[in-house]
Amino acid sequence: MNIDLSRKILMTGIMLLLSAFMPVCLYAQSDNLDNALEKNQYLQEGDPGYAEFMAAVLNLNNDSSMYYAETLRQVAETTNSPLTKIYYYKILSSIYLDRNYKDMAIDASRHQAELAQRYNYPLQLFDAYDKIANTLILQNKFAEAHDVFSIIEESLKEMAARVDSNTERQMRLQKDRSDSSQVVLALFFLMIMALLISIIYSAVSYNRNLQTVSDMKTMFVQNMSHEIRTPLNAIVGFSQLLALPDGLVTEEEKAKYGEYIKTNSNMLTMLVDDILNLSDVESGNYRVSMERTKCNAPVEAAIQTTALRVPDGVNMYYTTEVGDDFIIVSDAHRIQQVLINYITNACKHTKEGEIHIHCSLKERPEYITYSVTDTGEGVPEDKAEEIFVRFTKLDAFAQGTGLGLSICRMIATRLNGVVKLDTTYKRGARFIFQIPLNQE
Image (cartoon, rainbow, N blue to C red; front, side, top):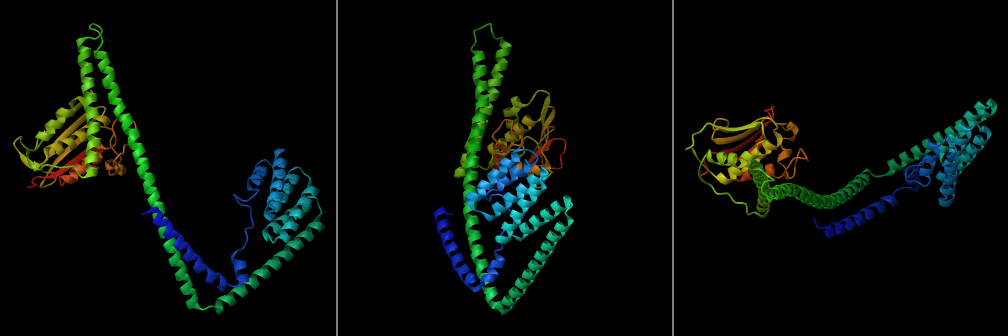
């Protein structure tokens, strides 16, 4: 959705909302609004002096509490906030009580009560009277404490009477109103709110999608710079070793270094192929060529390509339920590509045991099923679908871009087949690739 268009629609929605509010405000009685807009009785986070008050509370038992209380007083004077002034005397009373200055604590609470009564903060008024009464009891001044409790009782009665009066007046107002008018106003208000919510949600979603795309690009560049650098460094390093003067490197070492260079070159080629394949899919240039091909041939080619990546101590082998002359109609190159990704993935996560590639006609009728099973660390069942999402890597330190399995799914879709994780296999991981036997 276009951002400028969203802003225009949003402004239109706000104007409509204001136009809806105007008759509502005119329709309501003034005292009814006073009841609805009841002031907040407590200092909250973000209010003037809140941070200073909390600092004084946290430091109540040390000398710095007076410093924070004085800072709170200055904020109250600067902002001229009645509630902040009330809270200044509130904390001052607590500080005096903590230091056993009871008369000074009572005096501070009386100031709190005076302000609370003047500016109509009933809860703070009761809090002040309650603190005064309890402090008088600590001083054994029971008669004076009784008088304070009497004041609290009278105040409670006045508040109860005021609440009853307001309730009765509201009931009369509600009775006089037309039910149909209320329904129309409510529906109109809900429509405006739904419009605003829809516009805001669209704008937020658009911005979030832009941010997600930006984050994915950044992550892709970071991943690729690391993944390409690793095999490149290995190729350069071992090439330098091979270039050393004769006699410093044995023939056996040269052969080993050559294998390392070949392995990392293949790895680099695969990374580049992943990027190119992804680019082809995004641009719509990814093509498959359906031809008659031998069923086992792509598997043998994939095994030959990945043979050097198999870790020492891991046995990789292939079994098949079809003969070498068994023919299917599909794209042999794309089948090989999926199997190379499967086998490479198994090599990364299998340190010991085996990697078993199998071809079956029985697992799913009318389909050829290729599977790659390993005895590695496995994949959690709840990640069975997540691993086929591009850039997803369960092990952030493992080699690869996180594109291989995603590309496998794209290829399978082009070949009218499926790729998936066998969640019933628990001794490692078993990846399945199924394609129709005949696509002529």
